[in-house]
Image 1 (cartoon, rainbow, N blue to C red):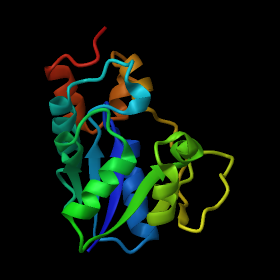
Image 2 (image 1 turned 90 degrees about the horizontal axis):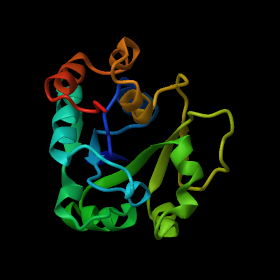
Image 3 (image 1 turned 90 degrees about the vertical axis):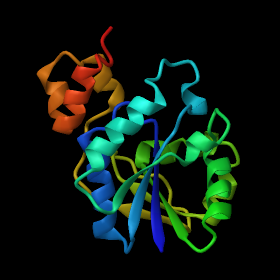
Length: 187
C-alpha cells in the first residue's frame, strides 16, 4: 500500500489542506493520505496551540466525506516536540510493508534544510511538493512537483480573523461550527 503523509498542526485544518491532498491523488498513484496531526512542532514551541484533541476532532470533521483521507494520531504516541525524521523512522518500523511519500507545500520545502536530520528525509522518502509559490525550489532526486491552483490561505490567518465571515468561508462548514461551538481562537 502506498501512503501519502501530510504533516501539520492543522490549527485549524482548512479547505486548502484538503485541496492539496486531493491534488496528490490526481498527480500520483497513491492509496491513502494520512493527515499526521503534530502535537507540538519544534518550530512552534513558543506559540499557543489548540489542544491536540480539538485539532483531531476538526481534522476528522473535515475529512469525513473522503474514504482515502484519514486523520492520524501517530505523533500523539511520540515524545514532543515532534520531529518529522523521528516520526518517519517510527512509521517505517510500525508499517514495514507500506511505501510512504511525504506531501508538503513549497513553503515548507524551502525550509527543509532547517529540519532535524533533513538529509535522512531527502534520501529515504519521495517528497511531493505542492507548488504554492512563484519560486520553485531546486529539485531533489526524490522530489515531485504537484501542479495546482494557488492557495492563499493559512491557518494563522484564519485564527487571527476568526470573527470574520471570510475566515469561515475557508473552513469546512462542520469545522466552522465546531470552532463556534467550542469558542476556539477567540481572543
